[in-house]
Length: 216
Image (cartoon, rainbow, N blue to C red):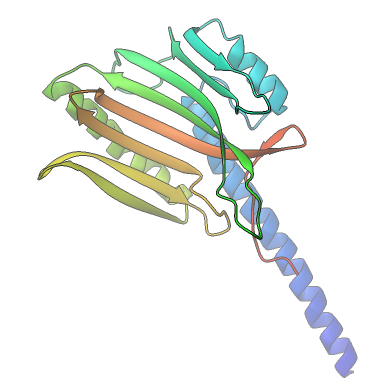
């Protein structure tokens, strides 16, 4: 009887952990997919990664593009300016798209792993009105997405005692890095800027987020 009770408890744990993992996977990928769909012209999450990169590289609306292919000594990098895609509430002077391959920090136990940073940047007109535009849209985005994540951490940017922007990282409990980062800033060099960044790994030609849910 005692053996059967232990077996029942183990089975329950297995079923519960599997269900929890599935719910976590769906929640995390659902949020990342919505962000990619709403603001990026091409999403990495609903197709093979090679197809995603090909569409991005050959997108006729991407102008002034810079592409560095991956080699033995360099990681992949793409940057361009959208000629027509303007997903923000304000009317930007310029919208930039960036896909940049990076590496995690390795140590003696875990080797460095490549991941991708996918970013869209809107440049508002200069001046006070442009600053208000990027700050207001940033706050709208925070309100829109904060409930989709388990936690978020803001960091103020300051020029002396003056607030010049904010960076906010959005996390899930079961993902080891911020899935999304929102940021706005204003300065003399870059002007008034709003940026949305998502991060993902690529495995078996698919974009994914590593999930460390309870697995027995």
